[in-house]
Amino acid sequence: MKRVLYNSCGDEALYAMIREAAAGRCEVVGLASDDDAERIERLRQADAVVVASKPLTRRLIEAGERLAFVHHQGVGYHDTIDTAALAERRIPLAITPGGTTVGVAEHTVMLILAMLRRLPFADAELRQGRFHINALRPVSRELRGRTVGLLGAGRIGRAVAERLKPFGVKLIYFDPAGVPPEVERALSIERRSFEALLAEADILTLHLPLTAPTRRVIDAAALARMKPGAYLVNTSRGGLVDEPALVSALKEGRLAGAALDVFDPEPPEIHNPLYAMSNVVLTPHVSAGTRDAFMEKMRFVFDNLERFWRGEPVEHLVDLSDAAGRAA
Image (cartoon, rainbow, N blue to C red):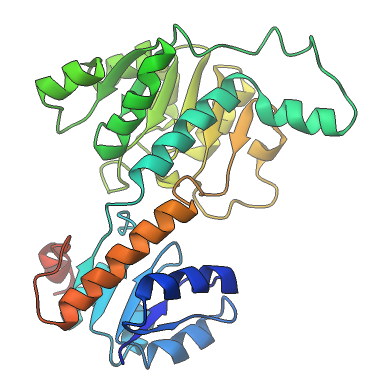
């Protein structure tokens, strides 16, 4: 029976879900601790590995003597997998586009509402006996009537737009690939340039992959071009944002607030200044972390692995030819 290592360390409840999705088609191998020595030992006997947030480095790939396939449980593999090392050994990589869209879109809307209403602050204060029935009125805002800017309008960006429409917002977007006119009409979204998006949006929400061109796309200059008193939301990748520049913009009052599910690095440093800001909402990279999404992803992963082992076409393979060129 083939052995599949789950590269991130989880608890027994998580491994039980993975085994349920595997349905006896292979042996699922977990980790007792987040320790590379154990991970390397497990990799020596693994036929495939499933990657989540824990990076699959060159060192780990080279330890996988039997490793024949790598599957990412999401889509953002650039910052978690050494593709050059895979290309050198001609180990295929597949990604899992399904399972994230609904969870991330719902989480984005939740963060926007929580950010506008200062929900974490109100909750934490009430638990300490401080009943702020009037104190939040000057800073709490409604979503209705706001202009929401989508930086990126792929699957998730469009799903966010669909869920925001009933709130009575104006939706604008910038996406390098554009959106078909019929989709723009269906979602009631209007295209803008990147600069116009920054200037017009009351709420800017990020839905881009992390690549070399998009890294720090929201830097100090971009933050300075944002509408005064605007809000920033990021459920995509932490590397899209220059975090020190964001902290400065919040401290100086140029931004009214932020909501972040992703960071760079992860987890954030224990003394991160964002922790002390009452106008910031933070969650630990869990926007796609529902049971529903995870089971959908895992079923696809093991279906795909089964196709690979049967010699059938595999879905959502990544083209590693560029990585092969860099490796050479």
